[in-house]
Length: 387
Length: 128
Image 1 (cartoon, one colour):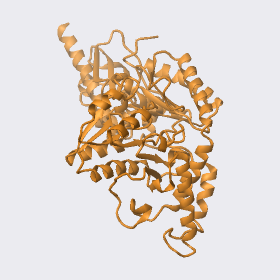
Image 2 (tube, chains in turn red, green):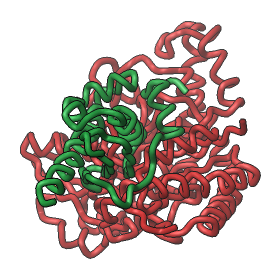
Image 3 (cartoon, rainbow over the protein chains, first blue to last red):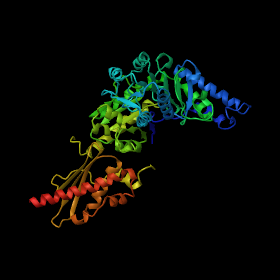
Image 4 (cartoon, each protein chain N blue to C red):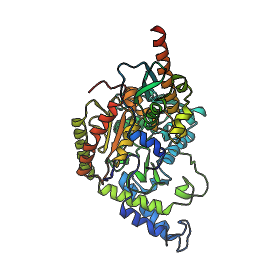
């Protein structure tokens, strides 16, 4: 059976080169990177190299602005909590959006319990934040704006350039969760008035368990993981050398292969065209143009998402859904809900997120397999009155 | 496919039993709501001896919802209304080889759909 992986926004397959780069650091180069002897020095060197590569990918002014973490979630927690604590004397108001990843939302909710005030900006039907709403929400107590670069579920890209400009004008720290955007979109942090940025290795064909927080020089932030002086005294803990090396390798390749995204976008559009020509009553979720090149989120009206995903899985195809049944908490997608998508369509939403390994044959396979699945499930649905 | 669902659940999901409608049904049960993500509609045909001779379903819902609907139609066929009323959600789940904890509410919905269909049958009978 053909296997087609279309869940790259969930995670990606590690590249061969990345695995090869990591292996020596799990076998023979095992010293602690902080040790001054010959067992540790090569580890330190490898970390420095990885740091430069990430700085290069992100367009940071200096490698010292790159701090390694255990992943996107830790970076988000660190950015938001770290700045909130550091700027406590200045104010207690944070602005974010209703469609952020739970790592951002739950950190904000936790801070609310500690007395901080948080504004969760709404989004329009495409998932785009309104710049005027942002401007209106700013008060003299606002100390942080945290808005994602691009949304993981629907792919909508936020007006980060404009947001950065406003943040700079008003003297407010600006963090962006760019976990989904890095490697898919060109970005140069030093030119966008971004003070902090989160990224994750396993979204760019690197290993799981390692990520980055970019902290622009001069940004006030309180370290969250305390202990040794690692990562410029910003984040303690013996370095995950192999993971960091893997991340550095993945970052270098991501920069080199950014043009690939054009091919992926074409495949994604081809998939959308093929699926919608064979099936009726499909609703596209997300901005029609201003969207990540690999992401395709569609609602199949009258149907529930998990039943579609299971059927796709039986045919070897991997995708994900915004339905309540799969969320682990029985809550439907908060992103689609914030976008005003009606509950039935939210339950029937499927996300296909393409990657570098996908081919046209993969798309043709999905286009062929999907219509009979939808037809069969619709015949079973009490909400469908068609033939 | 290992994972959250038992083989029996997957069997009922892949090839659900008794999908459809009964146009001259003696009882129809409609439960659930789209906001929660599950809607079940159960049709039953009951003969003069109060035996359920036919049952069909339509479901908007996840794998567990489809499987429990399918299973409940199997369990009621040939039973009297009185016997059918004794079918609990745990009986449905057990017949399927168990359900993940987070999916047990689907079996509750199946039980409710059955009760709703039987109540509809009894209400119709009273009117007749």
